[in-house]
Length: 246
Picture 1 (tube, one colour):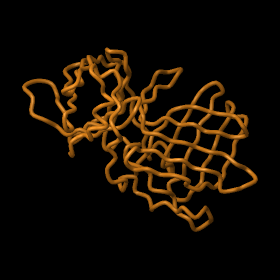
Picture 2 (cartoon, one colour):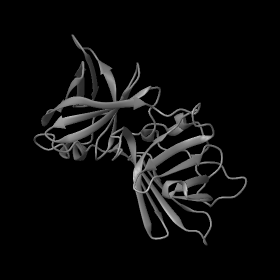
Picture 3 (cartoon, one colour):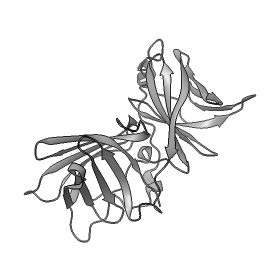
């Protein structure tokens, strides 16, 4: 992996109070869908290629960590990679040799875990972390035809992006409203793992912003790799989500 940019390392601060590296998104081809169509949505348009920082890769679980100094992290790992999300960015670390436990590194950043404890550090500081919550990642088997799913509370809502065409299905206000609309991509940044979508119908506007950031459901506490903000009819819905690879 390339070393972390100097400007990103400065976000860590003297005590790693803010784990704020720039997103480390690699090829988004793992989402398995076609490139984005910035020209609008129609019956022949293909769904956009979302940043890989929104996906768990081959991991089976998301794990939430509570750290000191006060911070929350989310991880997902498989045999080759540890994906880590903080409140300010996404990272991808590679395995490193260690006498016990498991250690992963990206440049000066390292994550060493043993049992339910972990230490996250670089040459500027250190976090002492404890595993809190974990749950299985969403899969295409349990959500067929869905490329990205997000949900939130008060009032309960969820959205799903189709994996084939630029179409969003919204279930809002505890299921009282269901809306399906085409959308268009207004911004997409693979490096930071951020995407902004807007309605494909001028008469029914909305905006959906997705960011690769550590997110915890405010009712269940479940950890997720994406923060989601949906603005519809002057109302703002906030929640967490995950990219779902084939």
